[in-house]
Structures are given as structure tokens and as C-alpha cells.
Amino acid sequence: MTSSTNTRCSDSLRDWINVACINPLSNPPSQISKKSPQEVEEEVESDALPAIISDSNNRVRLVNSAYKEMMGQPECSWLDSMVKVKRMCGEVVIQFCESKISENNNGYSCWVKIEWGRDGKEELVHAFCDVMKRECDSKDYVFTWRFHIIAKEACQPSYNA
Image (tube, rainbow, N blue to C red; front, side):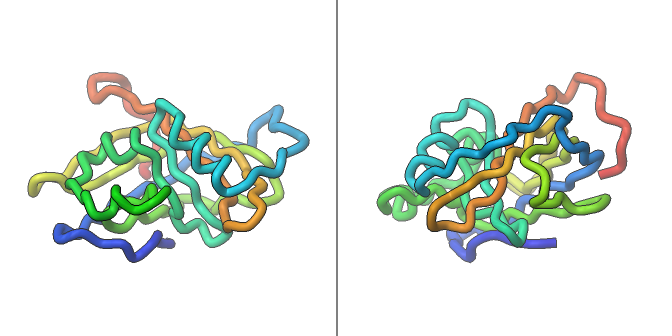
């Protein structure tokens, strides 16, 4: 179990990403192009799907606006005013229900259950997730996680994450 940055707002949040059913991609990219941290951050931020970036210790280093919107993140105007900071106000914890992902493969697919608290209630969504390896020049950005959110009315995956 790992955690992200220590950035906090007045209401401390903790999001749990429970990972299960990890499968290496059958046709992962054989070459990963090296990108600058700014290129990685811009690419993830431009994604319409909720997405995070994790490091070599599976700590969440960055989240995009779609992820923050899904969480209903409280307003942190002082944080948003800082240059190029895309961090959550709180902690995002990745918890593996099975074996952890290996950096030896360039891509994975998995099912996740994302849990968080909002307005005193616990919320959750199930999602299919694409996990792609990153090659970043200077920051410890190792994997991008893109969440394909499933509506609550849809069938739930058959795992116990």
C-alpha cells in the first residue's frame, strides 16, 4: 500500500484505488518514447478520462482534472493558482488485491474499485483501467492509469477488490 504527496486542504481526503485482475497487455508498445515532465503532464491533463500517474513505488504523483472532477474535490484555489501543479488535495492510495504490477512490462489492463468520501458519504465506482508505462526525463513518472468508468447501473466485475 502506498500513498501520494502530502498536499492537504482543510478537509483531508483519502481516495482508495483497489486494483484486481491484472493482465499484461497482449500487444503493448515495444518502444516507449521518452518525454519531458511537462509533456507527460500536458498529455494526462488533456485526457477526457480520469487519469493518474504513479511512480516507481506506486505512489500517486499526479491526477488530471477529470479525476478531480469525479472525486468532487473541494476547492483549493491556492493550490490551483500554483504553476503547473495538478495534485489532489489529500491522499490517493493504490492498494493491490493481487500481485503488484511489474515495471518489466510496458502495459497492463486491470479492474479497479475507486473509493472516496464526499459530503460525509462514501462514494465508489468500478472501472476498467489501462496502465501504460512512461519514460520521463527527470521525474519519477512510471505508469499512467486511465479509468474507463462504469455506470452504477451497469454490471459489476466479478472480483473482490
